Length: 139
Image (cartoon, rainbow, N blue to C red; front, side):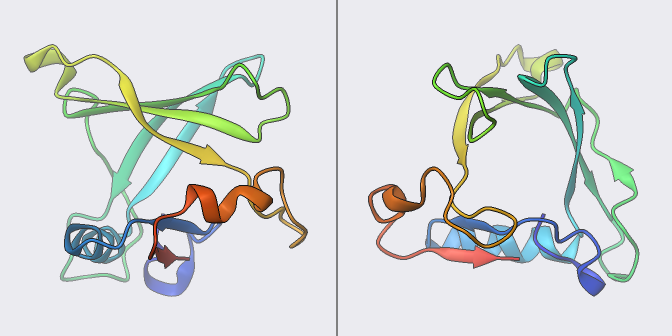
């Protein structure tokens, strides 16, 4: 998600708020080479997600090899009703769903701001309105 050693898993650019906790979280995610695995539905309107990490943070050259159990964290993403082209997704998460009964709930929206070829995406014009005053950007 946040690059990791050698930037092997750096397929996207992510941004988040600029609070101290976001800085620490991004650092921990990068240190553990946090990554996501996606399993899309047949109609490509939703995907279940698994979180992968390298728990041996003292060896950051290792890839994300450990899959966090779904009893600890359950994640998915569903295209919003307004999105037919994959430009907006509702990211949902449940923490400890088996032991604590947490249900899937909205975490944040994934929005297409820049196309892979560098041209503006569907939400490019709204970037300022969507973004915090300051943002942490990681690649």
